[in-house]
Length: 325
Image 1 (tube, rainbow, N blue to C red):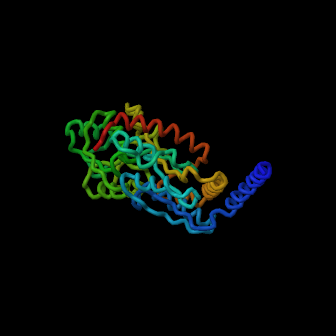
Image 2 (cartoon, rainbow, N blue to C red):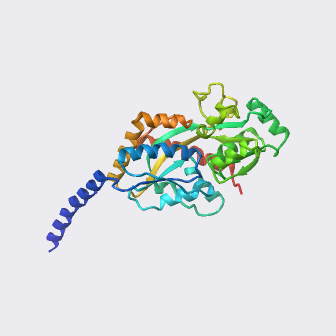
Image 3 (tube, rainbow, N blue to C red):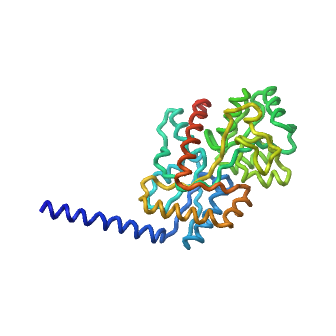
């Protein structure tokens, strides 16, 4: 009987593998949700929408973008981390993905999720963050901005998408490195933070290029510096913070797709193949460029390496920044 049971178990394993492969070949067969952990109009949203549209064409299935905003992205990230691992719920995450669990520990509470609960599928953009101010402001350069901030501590306000968010951490890196005191005004997402800047409620913002690109083109905003390792190719006149003497101020607002960590390997492979296909479509690159973002596609292996290095840098930055209430 034991021998028959072992044989039966051995026969079941190929059957199970065949069933998983069959499901992967038919994947998705149903609508797939693309969760964005921020309100519409922010960096994650402007990347998610053209990617979701391309996936709809590829799969011939609806791929709705679902905005689950709150807690600087923690709510939406945790929702996908706990979702069924069937590939039908994806996350378009930002660089704050690795920041938020570390920030929770600094604040003495249990993280709502851990990065290990999410499996990286594909990176689509990795843009250096820009320091932008209203065009009508008195600051024509980074040096003028920093000098004024030193002369008037706590008087210059900047908006963000929440404490320890993708828009807060780069500004905190700058204030720590430059020894300046700025007034932090957090909002629920990048789009409200930009609205506050345009409306004159605050005087500065750290942002990915996508949301601010049309306002830079139309002359409503001015870029003073970039957190990248090199000057932005499309804005060669904008210096980097590194070249201005702040070597620790390097930060990228990247946007990449994740699935719950328990997603079966055949389904993850189907997801990776789909992401590669839509990244190769010229329409995807054009749509991202229209939103001010350059396609910087990396598949699972390349994304994992990028994520590991970037997360280590961001965790160090959060520890330097310390507790923020």
